[in-house]
Structures are given as structure tokens and as C-alpha cells.
Image (cartoon, rainbow, N blue to C red; front, side, top):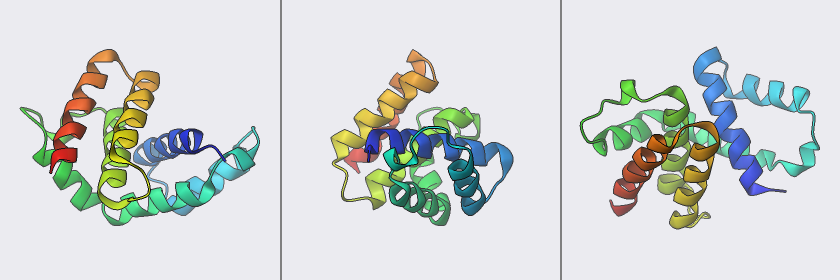
Length: 133
């Protein structure tokens, strides 16, 4: 199983959930039914744990993100960047299996794929502040 790919798909599902208002179960079920590659490449346990963890701790995660923004409000952040920040913040706060530098590096790689270079700097700055706390 590929954790990098699993993290990527988790972010995509999280982003999709912000648009569709699907529940975690609906999002995962739809993903498994429609995934066209080898599903064995995806660590579904990680995906489920992350999505459920983010859902259960969303208020705390958003409070941490908001507290580490400089001259920004959380509702101004694009949905893609907010999804990346929520996933990375969840991992920093609640997933002790992933080393902090790996969390930030993976978040920046996802940002490069799904957003722009300014967003990479923005997300790096926010996550660095969160990591220090």
C-alpha cells in the first residue's frame, strides 16, 4: 500500500466532501466503487481514520489553523488549500505514526499538484507555526 497515494486520495475525498456535503461513509463508498486503478494500492484504513478523525475534530483543527493564520481568515482560504491544511493539521495533532517533517513535506507536494506556488509558501508558513506549538 502506498501512503503517499493514500494521503493524496484522502485530500481529494476531503475536498469533495466540502463541495458535496457527503458523509465520510458516502465519500469512501463512492470512492471504492468508482476507483479505476488497483484499490489495493490505497491504504483504506488510513483514509477512513483520517477522514473520521478530521470530521470528529474539525472544530479543534479549524481553531488551530485559524490561530496560526497571519492577516487571513479561515473562510478566505480556498477549499483545496483548506482541505490540505485540515489533513496536515490532523496528522500533526492526532497521528503520531507520521513524523512531523514528513507531514509538512507531503502537504507541500500535494499543494504543488493541486494549487499554485503562492499556496505552497502559505501552507508551509501555517504548518511551520502549527508544528512549533
